[in-house]
Image (tube, rainbow, N blue to C red; front, side, top):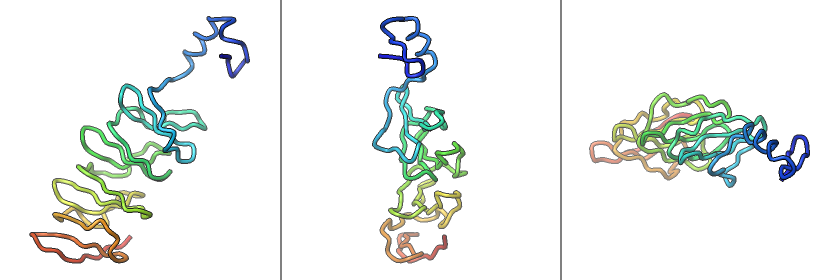
Length: 163
């Protein structure tokens, strides 16, 4: 137990430990298995935020019930039972809308989103809709490039979208 800045042993001078602790922010848990570049999810009082290890700064405050971390470009954060898409590097919100559910597409920068009970598809990079949330269901499998199976009025069909 020593100060990483000055090298003094804390047990030799308990006052130094007290001063050092005032400079630190402690978290209940750090999600080390989900580090992306210098960004890591931290938990304090049961809520999540995003911390930049290299600066070290809390980019997104610990206000979120849950998170899904996919890349340095976007993260899904849940607050008041609604999901939003944020840029974890800047802390800026990417999606203008909130969603009941988000299902991420593997290897693609978009996700299926449920808003007001209906499904659509959104770009996780800029928050634009690729498919407006007007469908009872979307097939989450990659059926064909730039096409998605969608259900509306009880019937299934194929819709095209562009990225």
